[in-house]
Amino acid sequence: MLDQSSNLVVNDPAIVSFVHRIVFDEHGDFGPCATLGWVDDDGLLETGVVLHNYLPYYRTIEVTMASCKNKGFHVGRLNMIADYVFNQLNCYTLVIRHDPNHKIVNRICKLLGGTEYVLANLRGPGLDDCMHILTADEARQSKFWRQK
Image (cartoon, rainbow, N blue to C red; front, side, top):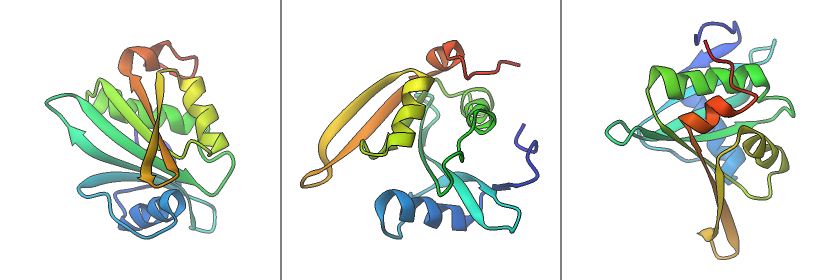
């Protein structure tokens, strides 16, 4: 399913830097990970997804996402990510970490379903973090899930 977009880039180290810079305001690393990204018509990265903290035994994975476009995570891309996580990797639980003040990501997570946890000071003093937990069952019940 990952080849449906001609603008899709897979496992490019630039995606890690792009996502880390947008989410954490700094360059950094996620450790062992896989990445998905989409470039615009000029070949510039506009949306990135880093899949990390993969625990196959527990069927869980964490995803950190970022976009410099307001519509970077449209339904088609969300379905591509969900298909990869829940069908190809056979994960049962997806953890989406994000800034609780990021309105677009918060809205997307609420529409996807699942449970949200705000963790005080996880990013440092006065810097909260949000973890959104989405199971495969919850994803399939979401109006955004397109089952094959």
